[in-house]
Length: 213
Image 1 (tube, rainbow, N blue to C red):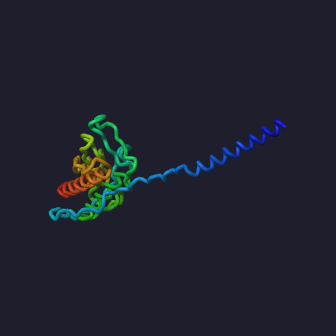
Image 2: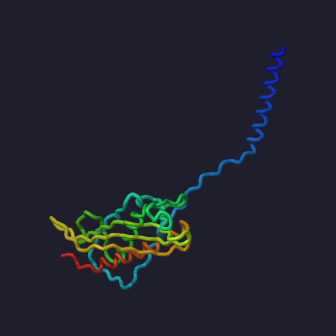
Image 3: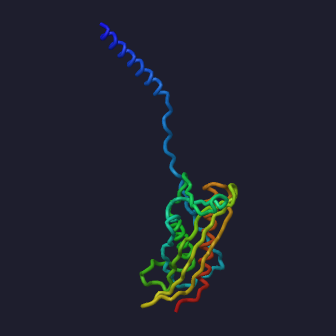
């Protein structure tokens, strides 16, 4: 009899525990849906100044190269007031739609297309090849409240030949623009302005180079 009573009591307690668990479980908050990172790009291309005269010769534009730290879709910032800016840090809830090298290649193509034909490299259709390496594309904080978008691009112009290549010119462009806010949106706006100015300067420089012979 004691055994039967013990089993009955255990069954009753188990039923009460299960009822309480179900009731309290229904009251627990559901987990939030994962937040998708906000996508950003460089926006529409800006028109070039009327003083930028077309040269008439075609240009073979290579894809912009970049180190692994900025050759991804993360929007990068650096803390000059903390670790000296040596450590690139990605924003968690913001992404580029393409990597910065791809975005800048697209921007340069749009800018050059307004002044001369732009063709694919290796086709033998242009007297001038343009290669570029992106050394910096980040929002850099000098204080927790103040930051700027920094774009640094090294550009090399080469005249291809039948057997050899001739260096026409090389130059590094660096543009800094203040960010209106100390967040990803502010950094993106500053980097857009800096990228547009770099593209404008590159086009102006290339168009002023001596025509390849």
